[in-house]
Amino acid sequence: SADLQDPHQFFGKKIGADRTLIPYTGIVKYFEYLGEESPRISVTNEGNSTEDHPLIAAFISSEENIQNLDRLIEINRMLANPDEVPGDQPASLVAEGRVFVIITCGIHATEIASTQFSMLLAHELATTDCKQKGFILDQMVLLLMPSINPDGNIMVTDWYYRYLDTEHEGSMMPYLYHKYAGHDTNRDYYMLNLRESRIVNAV
Image (cartoon, rainbow, N blue to C red; front, side, top):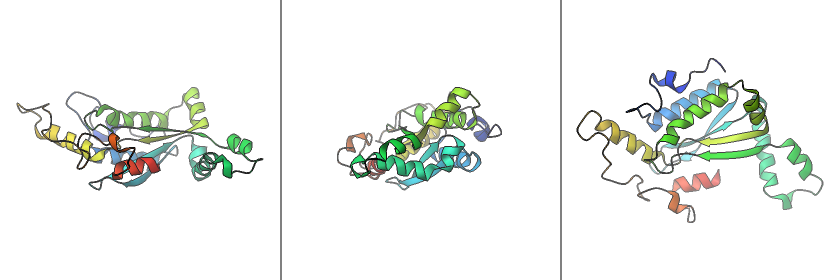
């Protein structure tokens, strides 16, 4: 794990530096790289956005938990429906299972820092040799979604780079950043009309 490239190395630029944004397509490639190279990370495509960009999820945990991920997901689903679990099983399932924690980033496309930071967090957890962090990874599975509005993220980064080094650098887009929802997708989580909110709800 220590040989894994951090995102600064992977892209050849410092993440979070002034005038630097990694487009969502690049972020997906970095997470796919981590999923292929790190035994602590499993990356899945949970479905495509309104404009057909993948909403990916990175399961991050200890190597043992990732190897046993299907079973841990099954236990989690069983404990979410305890009325369907025989009376003598819940305690053993709790002992065998792990806590699942979800972090979703970028529901507002212009609040772009969390999407950029998600790569740094994933790399840190994939490579850390800190005993405390290792203990946490043994006890839980982190489900990290680097953007749940990728269409808007792509619009924002495309707009920024289009006007970089011009008099209009840093100007706001003159249009909204979701094809149907407009401003953002979080108003839809009680109706589930949009692909994005349906995907996150399913996750």
